[in-house]
Image (cartoon, rainbow, N blue to C red; front, top):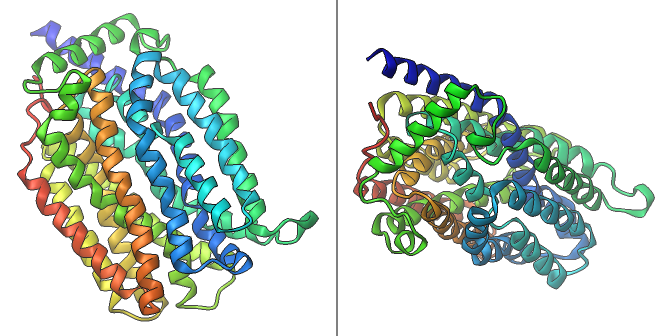
Length: 431
């Protein structure tokens, strides 16, 4: 019994060090990734008028990123599992940084589509690769809050990215470049620099972490191995993961998250611009409010989910709150009420992440984890195309955002109901 308590203490100490040593750096990587993904929303405030893009053209170009991301994601994540996370994540970041900076060269709709497609192909596998990487470091009972800490980069990108992108747009005209061109260039370069740093900073596995003591390393590796052995019904190989029924159900559940998240992210600046005549910087400041609400919801829900071991209920509740917020936004007018309901929607969406990915990773292990996580994220990213394109299409059709917001709200609520069919993990609280 004393030895067991010592092992538990060593695992807890190791997990705490992982959160301190790895999560802040992974957070920074995802912050830059998400910023490069959604900054096109702020570029649209100038770029659409300058290049003559309709809402439909813009929505298609913003969303096409996810088609190439989806096409290359599973192969990318399988390669990551075989060659090592450190080298492959570095490759992803270096190439996507270059592709993101190249967005400054957009001249017309075809070049917009082509460069967004290239950006998606370059970034394919990054997010599921990080989730897979974390499963090799973090025990299941700690995973929801660890994933949520990493994924607060999504909402933090909205908090800092709005004012930053708005400020960069004010560089309009410097040495002959438009503000939106400066924004793409200066927000793309950090990804390439960080990609090089990945090779220096990230250890491949706990066995390579010199900042863990021998007891911490042994106890953590033993706990992760025990959880792997206890996961009855898990998919261990690529084929197992791709045939696993609950992986496909979870993929359908996750589909609704990018539908809403990117529809809001890509069109939020335009929605706010329609409610008040602010400068790009002012719109950027206001756009950070919903993401602050999302950060609060994400962290609080993940901690509660880890304490209770409950995952499905928190995912479903988050989806319900998000749906209510989106539908409510369609029926209100004015800046204050619009920001309030969008904040409710973002709080609900962000609350889903930690519990969802903890539930999803409980069904896969080994190389199967890489393939299963990539499959879920790939199906989800199809939603990342459908959401922005659908909102853009309906915006052109109806001259407003209301119908698109209602449709997305209904889809999110349906996804929350679907997750209740999935069994809870039986490995979240191994004793």
